[in-house]
Length: 267
Image (cartoon, rainbow, N blue to C red):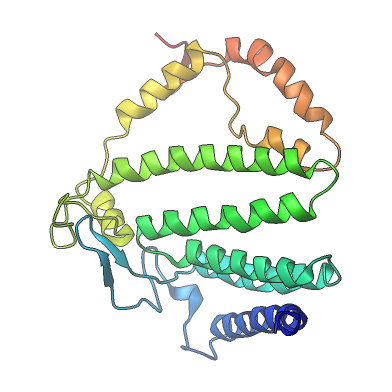
C-alpha cells in the first residue's frame, strides 16, 4: 500500500494542480460564472459564500471571495504550481515533494480568497510549513541555515502583521458581526467600509511617531527581509554586505521627515 501511494503521489498531485488551473482559467475567461472582471469595483467581491461562524466568541467567520485584484493572484498561483512541479518532476523523494507543493498552493489560495483576517493569518502561517520543509530537504548545500533564516525572518514579519491585525480588530465597530466575548470582529469587508466611512484608525499620530523614530535612530531598510535572500541562495549577494555596511551611517543621518510641502528635520 505504501509503495502504491508513493507511485501515485506525483501524478495525483500534478493532476489536482492542473485541475485547479483549468477551473481558474475558465473562471477568468468567464466560462464559469460569466464574471466581467473589468467592471468589478473596489470592495466588490464575487463568488462570496454564505458566512459560517467558526469562533463565535471572538467573531471569526469562514467567508471567502475574490475581486479583480485578488483573482489574478489566484490564477497566477494556479498556473505556476504545475510549472514548478514539472520543472522538478524527477526530484528526489518526489512522493513527498509534490504533495508539499500542492499543500503550499492550497495555503496560498486561502491567503488570496480569505475575507476574514483571522482566517487570512492562519493561511499565511500555513504557507511557512511546506516552504520551510522544501528549503530544508531540497535546498542547496547550506539548506539548514537557509531554512532557519527563512523561518526566522518570515515568522518575525508575521508577528508584526498580527499586531497590525489586532490593532484593526480592536477598533472595529460593527456589532452585528462582533464576537460574543470581545465585541469585535475580523471581517475585512466591514473593516474596509468602516475605514471609508467613519474611519477605522487615526493614522496621523502613528505616521508622525514612525517618522521621528526613523530619523532619530538612523535609516531602517524598507525591506530588511531582502538581506536574507542572498543567504537563501547558493552564494550571498554582494549588495547584501554593502547595504549592511553603509546603510545607517551614510544615509540615515541625512534622512529627513516630510511635513506639508517642505522637508524638515525631526523635532
